[in-house]
Structures are given as C-alpha cells and as structure tokens.
Image (cartoon, rainbow, N blue to C red):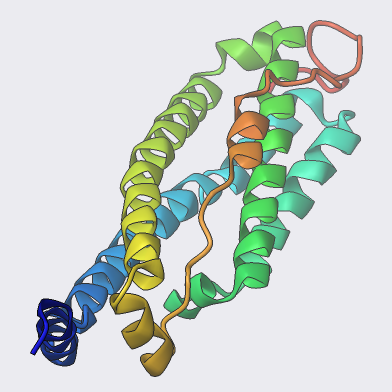
Length: 208
C-alpha cells in the first residue's frame, strides 16, 4: 500500500470522528456567536431605552425643533419594531435591517445632542446632562460588546469554510453568519451634522 493511500485513509478516519469533522468546534463557535450577539442586543436596547426621556427633556426647551425630535422618535420606533432573535444571525437580510435601524437611530441622536449647543438652558439642565452621559456610556458599551461578536463571527465563518469542517457544516445546515461591515463602522464614526434651528437660547415658553 502506498504512502499516499495510507494518508488518504487516515484523513478519512479523522473526518469521520466528531473532533476531526469539526462538528464539536462548529457547535462551540456557534454558541459563542449567540452569546456575543445577546450582549450586543442588550447594549443597543439599553441605549434605545434612554430615547423617550431624552426627547421629552429636549421638548421642554426646544419644542419647535420638531423635525429632529420627530426623526429621533421615528428611528426609535423603527428599532423597537424589529424582532431580534438568534435566528437573525442566520438571515443576512434581517441582520442588515437591524444594522440599518441602529445606524439611523445613532445618527438622529447625534443630531439631537449636537443641536443642544444652541440652547444654553437645555445644556444646563441636570436631567439632560445625566441622559447625555448615560447615552455616551451606552455607546461605549455597544462598541465594547460588538468587538467580541465580530471576532466570534470571524472565527465561526473560518470553521464553516475550512476543510473538512465545511463538509460537516453543509451536512448540518450551518452557513456563514453576517457581520458588522466596514461601511457601518465608518458611518458610526462620522461627526454629527447639526440641523437644529439657528435660534439660540430657550424655546418659546421658557424653561421647565
């Protein structure tokens, strides 16, 4: 028997074993992705939960800024309407919708916070400052949570594309999972565009 034939037989034996075929590794990586995803969703939800109070606070000083306030409210509603489950990770379209909704909310919040510079009384409000601080903390937590998710998806996708584990992945229906894109990262990193009105000081009606 030739060395080549012996080598092929050895590869076949390894591929048939749970460890050699990559099944156990796929399971471990899949669970890691789910756990990382759960933390990402939790942090996004934490940020979204702050929006209603922030909008109500701003209304007390800048109620005439209806365009920005409406945009934030609608973006928050869009985020809340998306059903997020572990299955979202197996549906690139659903994942893209989730990502787009979060980007839109982040963008409108940036506009809202940047526009507060035109309203000294709003900036001085203790409640507003506290909400602003909480939102900044929430954004930092989102960034921290996304990193393990990105890494775990990369590791998982390598497994389902590699030989011989790719054969196991195909046999059991495991496919590559979508990840946060470079385009989405650059969008988040863009500086906020101020679209508040030009009127300084407090809005009609005075302070709270």
